[in-house]
Image (tube, one colour):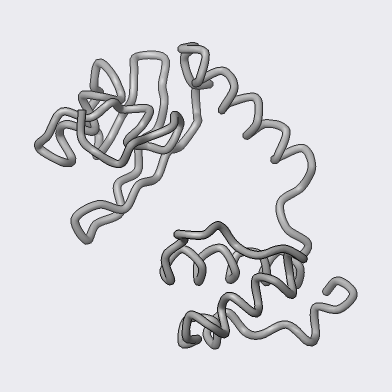
Length: 142
């Protein structure tokens, strides 16, 4: 456990906190106010993650570096590294996609693109990278 982690709230307690308490905790942990229009569910997730990182040390520098490289590659249109797993919650279900040399695989089926996977999941036309959070999104299907 890292220094000061003992006085942090339990993530289960964060899940029950009201917005004013979440905002106070954000200011305490981040030293700055949260983004203006951030929702309560996002505040809870972000704060729970931050508390867990402070208590357990967070992801390794090597893992963060690999994630950063993968994000940069995907934003340039490069293929995701083989073995990369993308996870997205949608429609009450968690969808896992693994990148292979043949293309993205979900539920044992290989797709031609991430956009085809996103369409399979949602039934609507989405940019696959946007759907999986690899590119900036307006939040609307494309």
